[in-house]
Image 1 (cartoon, rainbow, N blue to C red):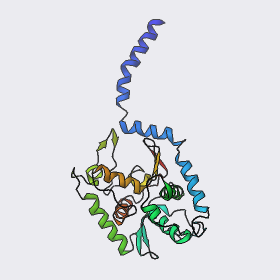
Image 2: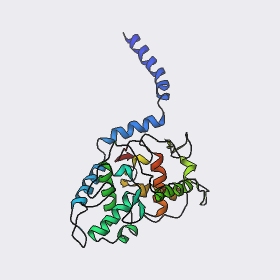
Image 3: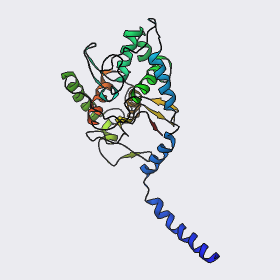
Length: 266
């Protein structure tokens, strides 16, 4: 009996390295995210965002319940997966965050500078992050379908495409250096291919997301900001036309991909 048991243990030990080798790093990270998803702290940001949406705030003591995110005043469901898009009232192409800043200004009287000149995780910029998380969550599992019917939307796509491939900074990097082809990884993690190939929620479709490593909720504006930092570019202005154009390019390329927001990242 003992001999049989010993043989079984030795056989299992011999097989284990082979079995482990069959599991890729990306599979391991996916399992890690899945284990964390049930307790995703993003739920706290969702709750805060919903409260902020309904709360009467600012000099005008008004809520955001009449905010038009592209589907009509107060309509949230399905709005996230069609942003960035053109808005006639501002004459601009706007992403979710810049549109929320517009609504906060127009409806509540909150100065946009409080967000644009603010800091990540603080003040009104933190409030926009929470709002974006809640709005995004209302379109979870819906497919991205950014409009391109307006000339301004098409122009932003082309500008975003040029920015995606523009090289610069001290390391001569571009967005495409990391996300322009398949089979690349950084810190043992696969990098999504974002230049024309839709991914399964790991790229554009996964932000806002909770970053476990920093204990923060990151929106797409924050994600793009950090990408530029890693490329050794100057920090982009919050909600600038450049970051919105990149959002248009990435969002149009993600057409048909289901939104995974709010996701959880390492």
